[in-house]
Image 1 (cartoon, each protein chain N blue to C red):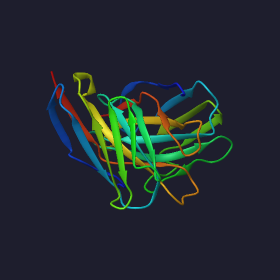
Image 2 (cartoon, rainbow over the protein chains, first blue to last red):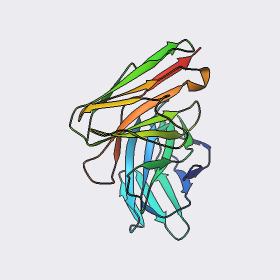
Image 3 (cartoon, rainbow over the protein chains, first blue to last red):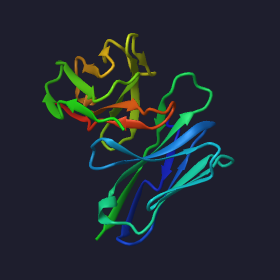
Length: 113
Length: 115
């Protein structure tokens, strides 16, 4: 079963608005990552937040992590049409001897010009 | 960051045939990963391929259906065998970043359609 569950499944906003996507997970993690995928192509890493961090920024991106609620949010500020893509959270589970990422179902973001 | 290429970028195949997908990395990496992304779905890990050892398959994936080779530290192949329309997906390879348990870098994917 999927470790991460994003919501909403789809989000449509106007250019300039902020977009917030949420991710919930089930078990303890080492870190949580967000990736972007344009039109079924390869994934691009956006940001990584470790289990001992609560907030991280990168340009127009802001990620929060609440380990007590097992949830994370990705905020994209001042959105642009080029931000239109699918966004996935991925978790690296703690305690595992083998490193691997488990991806959520994703949020399809559409930014209308 | 690593630069990853995949061949072919897309293919249309007949059921019952096999397709081998190549993944080339511009630097030496220990761990390579193969994922499947079915239409409109998220990524599912097929297997982890370390150089010099047998690939480790995830639940629901078997070597007979998805044999993997890892002949050196910059290259891997995934074969989708005896294909059926249910195998129509995007197949992606990725590599671990330089930091342990860190970012993964993805190839552009291979879009496979099985008729």
